[in-house]
Amino acid sequence: EKLGNKTSYGFIVGRTTSGKSFLSGQMKNILGYEVISMVELTDSVKKSMGDDDNPYEGEVPIAKVEAAVLKQIETTKATTIKPKFVFDGYTHAKYDDFWAFT
Image (cartoon, rainbow, N blue to C red; front, side, top):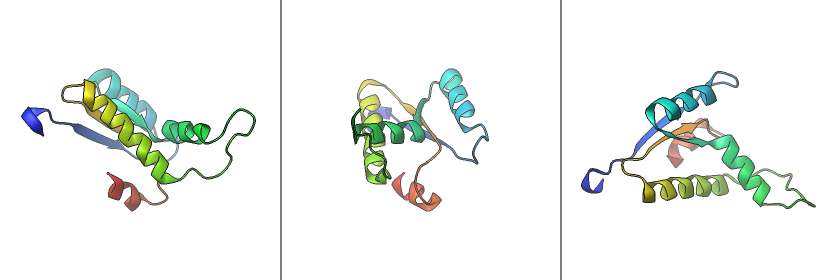
């Protein structure tokens, strides 16, 4: 990347309750990674698709989650030298779809 401003990415994947969020938190606290929690981003997008009176109850389109991820990355990259990100899980229907996105 330009002038050595390299971006690092990590991916934590595994079964439910396997410790993904714990390990992501440790990477944040010890190594300085920014956690991209796919569950939290999906919940945030879902909340933005409805309101207090009529919360959205349907499936969240993966394209909207991907857009939220990209926005988080770009916001951090604009203010951080050599940013580091770790993905806490993935919300794509298939594992291969997640890798196609990244």
